[in-house]
Length: 236
Length: 290
Ligand SMILES: Nc1ncnc2c1ncn2[C@@H]1O[C@H](COP(=O)(O)OP(=O)(O)OP(=O)(O)O)[C@@H](O)[C@H]1O
Ligand SMILES: [Mg+2]
Image (cartoon, rainbow over all chains, first blue to last red; front, side, top):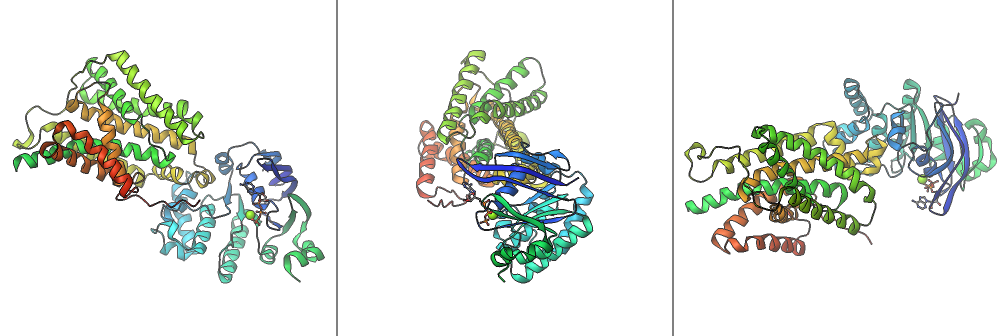
């Protein structure tokens, strides 16, 4: 059974329809990437999965319907969202931001251990733990957003351009951490990226979205061979 | 000089009460960006409940804590039943609801308990404490109760996960939902806490101003001035503003403008702050892009 199944997903902002029946699925343990031009509907798809936009169509997570559910309940199923724009709690400290990521968890001791683990992944966040999060640099806030999502101990992470604003070296480091989390903790990931080359290097499956529709899908090896993809997204 | 010290200290006592109500205003403001004009009448209503409980034979502190609990529940219920359906309405519509709530609470209280002024007991002894000549024991007690309340609130918001979640929900509802916080309930809890704080303020001020359905009118105005002075989005500022307004009101009333014009101090402060420094002493300066 697929971990995540989306069938004929439609969404609109007011009168403007932006998703015209998207279908895709991902297996447990997979890193699947959604690629597409600006405005294709990638962010909207991730927001739809979290119940943040009004949708039609079916969405299933681990067999359960999640469409028409409240965001707070979807999170409790183990879906963590690294939102577009980072979603920092700007007036709270870095550590308070991280603790909020674990808000729904009851295992207090494990939360403390995870906090340490996050600080070992991102030593920069440890240095900034008492600093007001709104004063962190853009890149640091991006690390914070990924870390906040990890604090949930999610089964599935929805990552909306996690490399945005990060220096190339940090992008490599972040993707290394994501790979490690995926391999060691079996966290599945749905990844939206501008950096298609990096995304295809990390993912195992890919879907190409154009103006609210899936136009191509397959394993990354197959996708990388596609001439149109190479021209539009990889630039060679 | 004695007279001056006396007025300053008495001002601190009422200032603590303004500080509490100002804090209640700030809590709702942070979450909704609206000033709850019914906050004072809610506190007044709670104080009548306490009065009824005491008259029914309950010991003072029993009535006190029951009233605080009842007020908390009342605040939660009001948010869920009355405010929630209009929460996405334009600000002006919500403010009208607040004012309707104010009028309704006021007249319902008058209808149940009559508009005649009643005395309200103080839990503190008649004779002055520690043989001091500056403050009545009720004034000292009221300051003590206020400080305990403020410390408890500080600890709650600073050190508990629920307090953290409430702050998060007020600042950033969308990200809060994404970490699983039930934002609607946090708002309701905020109303409950604000009403509970207000009830303490009401019970502490009632022995001074006596119990009547209009007793909180002046207090709300001073509290509003205090919240503005400290910065309407700053809890610490509201507390500071409360004590400052209490002292200013008392000292100016006694030595400068006379007791009859005391309330004008609040109005002058409100207008002054709004024109000179709308963000108050500790508030954040907001720049809105148009
Ligand atoms: N809040 C909104 N109100 C109205 N239209 C919106 C809103 N958010 C997005 N849209 C529109 O929906 C479409 C899809 O937007 P979406 O943000 O999902 O694209 P995207 O694939 O994430 O793009 P990008 O790569 O630029 O992040 C766009 O045409 C956009 O203009
Ligand atoms: Mg996007």
